[in-house]
Amino acid sequence: MAKTITFTVQPGGSLNGQARVPGDKSISHRSIMLGSLADGVTHVKGFLEAEDALATLQAFRDMGVVIEGPKNGELTIHGVGKHGLKAPQKPLYLGNSGTSMRLLSGLLAGQAFDSVLTGDKSLSGRPMKRVTDPLAQMGAVIETTEKGTAPLHIKGQAGKLKGIDYQMPMASAQVKSCLLLAGMYAEGATRVTEPAPTRDHTERMLSGFSYPVEKDGARVTITAEGRLTASDIDVPSDISSAAFFLVGASIAPGSDIVLNHVGINPTRTGVIDILRLMGANIEILNERIVGGEPVADLHVKSAPLKGIDIPEELVPLAIDEFPVLFVAAACAEGQTRLTGAEELRVKESDRIQVMADGLKILGVDAQPTPDGMIIQGGKIGSGSVESHGDHRIAMAFSIAGLRADGKIVINDCENVNTSFPEFIEIAPALGLKLQSEQG
Image 1: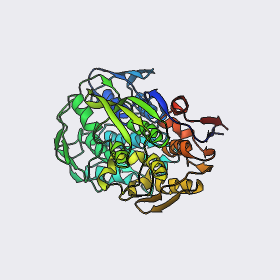
Image 2: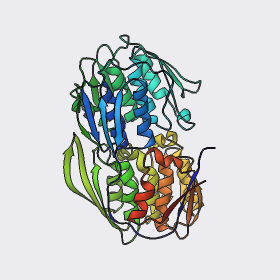
Image 3: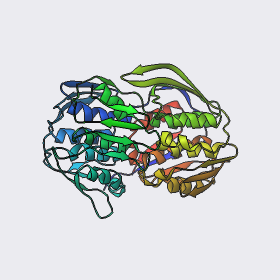
Image 4: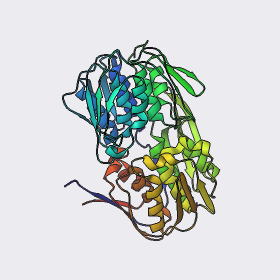
């Protein structure tokens, strides 16, 4: 039997002190991928030692890359060059990691060998046609299930991929990154135009590895004319993990925290912008650039929040933070309305429905809509809620305990290990009354 983990949060308290949350998941994935394909040895500090990023690491080990570590967030990657990967002996199992599967499908489409990508039950239900359809336009040969889901059977088309000019129908950093990685193996230019800005870690890191990438407004262009040169990477703390404490300190009276070395890439700071629009007191201190990525310390004090209509242009910049932003809305005075966020329905769970169901159990007036939610701020009660195996849902409901009038029990929390295994140490150290029990 797989182990089950249940979180129990006692009500009340405040968050105080300093913390450094673990490394950014997006950047950790990409450091393995590009470091493996580079010429030379890449050293990584601040790597996220959580299941998703470790799934990417294992996949590249299975393709013949020697990677030392991780030890205390440090890795040494012995790059094999752009054409140095070897055929894996078995299917590459990627656990719960959508980033791994979508980015690797692009990277592996242009190799000289065949491969199979598999994942857990949640990942096997997530839509993959958004990457396999444009890859097919480039000449990739990828078989999915009838529903367009994993497992993905990829027939390597080395030397046969063609660059395309692709207008993305939805704002998705994973689709953009997948096509850019395929474009490194395609004849001619691959151009990707996005309808709204999404995280640009792939483009930044390609440049950091001296690979030519052209950015012109919403369009990114890449060709096969280039090689990756090993580079040292210091991964900033993940703003998606910091977001739980940004909200927690905002909603719990008497809170005052500093989160150190957090990545504040402008394609990721929607959560800060939205919380400030609601009245949060968040200061950005000690801004600096580390390895091409902007980093800062975030100082947060409790503040009364007001409900807002969330601007749609901020939605792609905060897409992973909405579970905990829904908790902020539940504690705010008045109504908060989210629109334009259909993407939340195809994450690790249907995050709109699952959060609405849980908030209702806790006595919050939360009405799901096809592309968002309408939440009337008020009191948070107590109860037992389901996370549906979604790490961000589990942590969001944990934070709700700071303003609850009774204990909250959250079921099915084992997947917190996919992004933030240290949550169960850092959250109580700052003041959340959280206990984790294995069943």
